[in-house]
Length: 475
Image 1: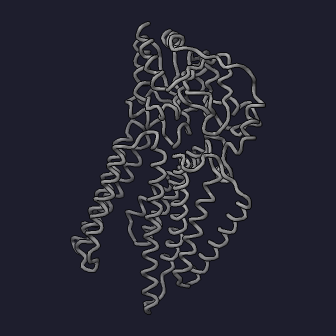
Image 2: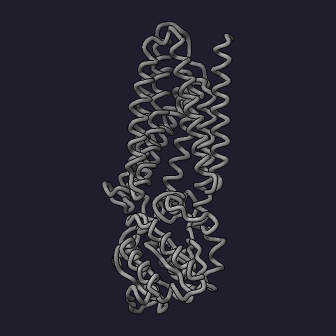
Image 3: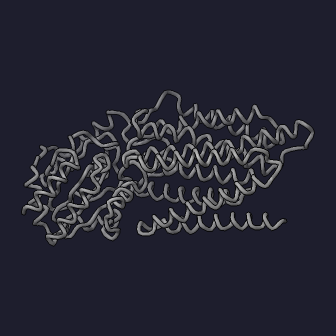
């Protein structure tokens, strides 16, 4: 091994170490930013080492200019997207990243297998079993991730209906696709070399990704995004095995393992199994939504004005703010921080209640509030904050629907029955800022709005918070 080869291998080890340290620092919101920076530095080292490796290998021909062009174009698009993306569009962007990652990993395996198949056809011997196994897994998982993530992104963007879509014979079709995939994989594992069979596996996996995600909707989407992220990492790890790159293996394994753990934690937080989520999501049909309301309490909605809400907040001893997707839609994270500052100046204790699946992706509310520099100690997870509600003077709900719906506890007919929620209804007084009485992403009405303790402050979250800030200052 030459001195250059040794240096490049050390560079890959350094990159892998940066990935591990970066992921570890993402364990806490306080260190997540530096964790991202460490991971980005690791990726920079890995890409630079690859460019040097290719540029110094005469057999690679013009491969290095292609890499440079790819880095410039891809990096430019990434930088532009990161600078211009709205927080409301972040979940669909994450889904697109999953699609790109899974698709790129699958392309690596396809390219390597086609090249090796050509060598075998020219009398170069058989393809080794490790490469075949890694290629099959990479192609299947990467293709499922690619098409599934595109559907998930379409659902979040509104290009595809967010409701679960179940069509006749969907489950037999899925079973058939799995059987075809297993048969094709067995054929290749038996020592047969066939590019057409590989492409059959690709088509089957792409179709399976569509049929897998289409029946899922409502409050299950954050879990699906997390699961697809785990798929992306696994596909990348398989690509590393295909081309013998330890850094790809390490990075993919980290993403796959962390995504899998996050998926399990989120599913547990919703009191649902991952299998149950994949079989069918929340809000299946209008009948389900009707049942959710019909079995619950009846009553009337009590509307309040800004002055009433300001008086309740300013003269409270404790306030818990419950952010939801409506906060992201209105881009009101800075306004809610300003309101909290005003309340704290008046001696009010302020905390934020974060539900695991609030928003449209894992950690959506944490990212949103971090952008507004909300102090990390004020953010409380569901299990930690729930006992506090009954001792709280005012719970301020901003655009959160399904994660505050008491039907999850009280109405067995509700599609979200059994899902742990934030115990907002236990607070002494409740203020809900909402545009209208439209149901949340799960497609069901919220019984919290009929609670006699609840005052509805209708309007855009940012406008309402701005008016509240002025009214609180005036008191």
